[in-house]
Length: 398
Image (cartoon, rainbow, N blue to C red):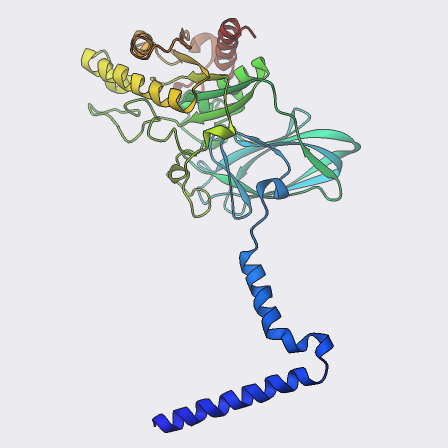
């Protein structure tokens, strides 16, 4: 049996040699004689070819903590997106969504020259947005994710100028990061009453005090916010803290989602590069959910205070030059004084005085209305933004 196999191998080798010799004997100038080597070189070139860079594929300005992978620009956190100047007749934006169901799917909007022209929910297959341009007159186009990361993410797979041109808009001279919870996300701001429960269809971060403040300051923004999350505990109806729902554990990441993430990747497993967005101002609005755990108990309020101090150190490590504004109160003021104590204790311990504590007044639902689950209305968000922007302008000299 071994001899038969050896003979077969020798015969096949001889035939292969004869065929190869015959292939190259007639016309060496055609390159046929080096076909094997060229094929190998071509294969190596294909294998080593890198995917287009972010700049090569999407010549746009990025908004918030975005992530580029395998040709798709992923959007997780509230307010993430792109903005660009388009010159031409029609620009096409192709997107992909998540299998999250209507109440949890990503809600997105498209703006042209500051006016919202599209407001859609993205399911698994995503959508294609065809946006008319101004011909030879440039228009500003902005694509923004209105809903938060926890429920679902979405991605931009292509932006086709259809023969026109795309250029990123210029950066603003001011930058602000806002860290918070459902209030910062704009939870339920589009709901008809406080009796409605959560749905991404009624969540709109652009109507939150967060982005309203950025607009009043004429600043680029980045949001890091998750509904129900706190400093030491997420929202709870029991006597125990929900320690897995806290912002500090995810702040150094792209975000968090319990649903489908960035394709095969999860935002909570991806480190955020803090050099990509260096804020002048950071706003921290955390404690509303902690209140459900701490209540009026002194020992639990002390836990919150110590956790807050630790988080301030974490934020400062990543943002050494930013002025930090700590605020609380829109949905309850129980922890406002503890938050202030934390800021004072942090400054005393570290010597860091580039920080300010600021109280929001509690919302007045009877006068200004309420969103879903007793969250702030658009009117309350507007009033809060005006107060916060005025405080920041005063402290920053803007």
